[in-house]
Amino acid sequence: MGIVAKSDPKFRMEKINFIWSKAQNSLDEKMSQKLQKDLATFDSLYMSAKQDSEHHKTIKSIEEIDMKLEQMLRRYDLEDTIRAFRMKYKYERPQIYAETEESRSNSVLHAHIFDDTRVQKLWEAAREDEDFSLEELDAFFSALKDHETKIDYYKNLIKQEKERKENEIHHGDDQEHEDLTKKIKFTNKKLEEAFEILQGQVTELKANPFKNPKVRQLWNKANSNKNLSPSQLEDIKVELRHLEKQMRKVDYHREQLNNAKEMSKYGGEKTNSLHDPEITELEEEHERLARKMKKLEHHITTKVSHTEL
Image (cartoon, rainbow, N blue to C red; front, top):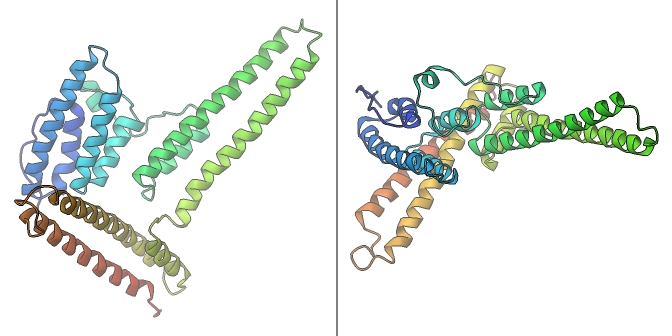
C-alpha cells in the first residue's frame, strides 16, 4: 500500500481535517479518494449542526453525527484514527468545535481532565494502554468520571465538618456531628474500595488483554511456554492483537454480507439473486479476509507451540 501524496483538502471543520490528517496515509489512492468524499459529507453535516446550535439545537445531534462518523471510519478499518479522534474530541477536550489557530496548535494529549491525582494517573495508564479497546476505554472514562463525582461528594462532607468545627456554638448537636463523622468514614471506605476495583481492571487487562476466546487461549498457552523469551512473548502479543483485529473485521464483513443478502430478498427480481455483483464482491472480500485471518492464526499457533530453546 503506497502513501498517497497529495495536498490536504481544506475542510471547513477542524475535526474533519484532523481525521483526514490521521487517516489519509493508511489507505491506498482509491480508498483515500473515497474517504475524502465521505468526509466532505460529514463536513457539511457538522456545519449544518453548527448553524442549528446557534438556534439552541441540542448537543445530541452532534453526538449522533460523531457516532455515524465512527461507523463510517470502521468501514475503512481506521480504528487508530477513531481512537485519536475520541482522545482529542471526547476525552481530552470535550468541546464540539475548536477551529481557532490556538486550538489547532495546542496539544491536549496530556491535559489533566481529572482533578484527583490518583484518578488522573489511572486514566493516563488506561489511555496509553493499547490493550484497551475503544468500547472499554469509553466505559472506563465514564467510570472514572462517576468516581470523581463521588470524590466531590466526599470533599463536600469534609467541608461541612470543617465549617462545623469552626462554628462550635452548636453544643447540643453531638448526634448530628457523630452522624456526619460516620458518613465521612463510610464514604471514604466505599471510595477506596471502588478505586481498587478500577485499578484491578487495568491490572487484569495487562494479564490477559484479549477478548476473543481463541486469542485468550493462545496468549495463555504462550505464557505457559517456558521456552519463549520475554521479547518473543512481546512479539506474539503484538501478533495476537492483529489476529483479534482481523477476527473482528471478518465478523463485521460477515454481518455486512448477511445484511446485503437479506436486503436482496426484498429488492424485487432485479436484485433478488445471490449473484448480484455487489453481493458477489462482498462474498469474495469476506473469503479473502477469512483466509488471511486463518493464515495468521496458523502462524501464531505454530510460534506459540515452539519447543526449541
